[in-house]
Image (tube, rainbow, N blue to C red; front, side, top):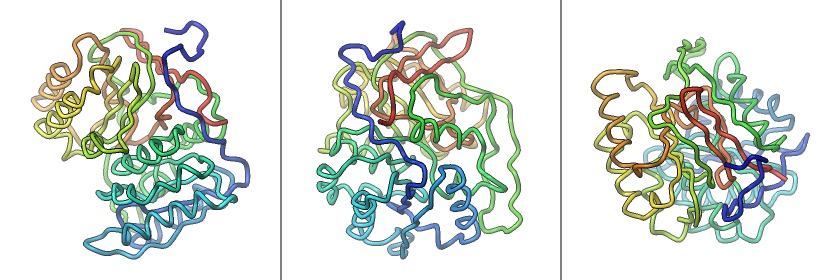
Length: 348
């Protein structure tokens, strides 16, 4: 590991986009599912919270549902994303929510390569948009919160989520990432006006296999990674890679999760992996048969000599730590706990 916190030679960290400046507009697009207009009260609350958190006006682009809840035709969704990239008043782009179809946009993103890079933030199915954008621009992207799930939280977003996002896209100084020692009960009925603050449970990251490692951070939603593999939008680091993966409750079922990991192994990605980071699986038991089987799956599918950390606060969980995909990082995990440090700036 680097004693100085500098990026090691051979770690092909990507370029940081410009930081989000005070007063800059935060653009919000729906690359996949249609949801903002479906939950107007939560959307209103989320926009107010986002503006307060990032210090600029939020601009939510409208969407119309088609084909079972997709937020419009692919050309329209891609056009809105590109409009936000073209607009000099927009300092960062966030997504409303995930879904299943953000890969629709990839055929229409070639223009992004010629536009100035901006911080692009999302998670879940928006892994496809993030990594596709990254493949076209060579810029760091941010696996972090979305408008409705995180900023629509009642009565306000979790402070840890806001602080982590601000550090990533506003401050951008790198350093150790926060890993909260608690998590919120999944769920909540977004259609209710009297939403409630979700119950807290103690529990932080778990070291399944200890060790130290460094490399370039890469990953996202594990089934979506499989959809990208072998396409021109699949551009993992050529050298040492710290792989982060997460999934929904359904995709975390052991046969499905194992299927995804084995597929990544077949692509050759795991040959370069120096550490495996796994986001907390929502709604899954903390102990018992599933837990034991999940541990076995990770130990069997990951390279034999790499550290494995699970129950990390990214993906489908709250509070949520923003991960700078494409940045060089170093990991130190053992009996003392887990430290994940970003080497170098995440925004310029």
